[in-house]
Image (cartoon, rainbow, N blue to C red; front, side, top):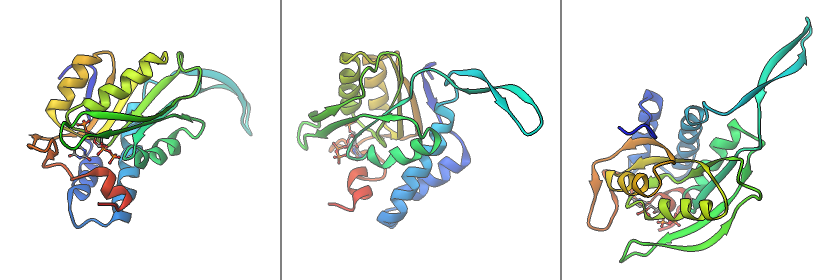
Amino acid sequence: MEKNIFIHDHPLIQHKISLLRDKNTSTNAFRHLVEEIAMLMGFEALRDLPLCDVEVETPIETCMTPMLAGKKLVIVPILRAGLGMVNGLTALVPSARIGHIGLYRDEETHEPHEYYCKLPHPIEDRTIVVLDPMLATGGSAVAAVDFIKQRGGRSIKFMSIIAAPEGVRRLTEAHPDVQLYIGHLDRCLNEAAYICPGLGDAGDRIFGTK
Ligand code: PRP
Ligand code: URA
């Protein structure tokens, strides 16, 4: 595996992803699982956040102790399904700023169409974590990273709960500098560009639409 691709093999993440795949999992349980998985993945994906020592007075004495340093983290969910992962990340970093990118896939061409983009400004010197539970053809991921780079973003991580090899290839070829965190790498895409075995349409399952 390339150095910028990290596949989570933690048993808790794998267990929860199996529950997500089950077509009988309720909307409410699905939503909670997406949030929990995002938090567990985020714990690992954020292990290189910069620290600096600050002075703190404990009940015993004064000491120098590490706290998060630098500009506030930016979280960018890809609408809609990425929204389901946001609370998992803000539970870890409550001070994070949140941008939004709205994209939907054309049902026939499977190419992404933009309908919204609002990002914190300035964004240049911040770590940016893009969230989307599904990396299928990779079209949405590449378009989202393109928008962020056009607006000056440089340090970008992309978190997806389930990815297809086709999407991983497309994203890493277009943006080799992006650090990609994947909960599980699935087998392939079907003729409708859905991930197999996957979990179906993530947005519909999170929001209870069809
Ligand atoms: C899904 C998913 C990703 C995209 C992945 O969103 O949440 O954004 O498809 O597919 P790709 O890798 O082939 O681009 P969708 O376009 O269905 O929109 P929704 O979240 O609003 O349902
Ligand atoms: N988007 C989804 O929500 N699921 C897939 O399997 C592919 C794209």
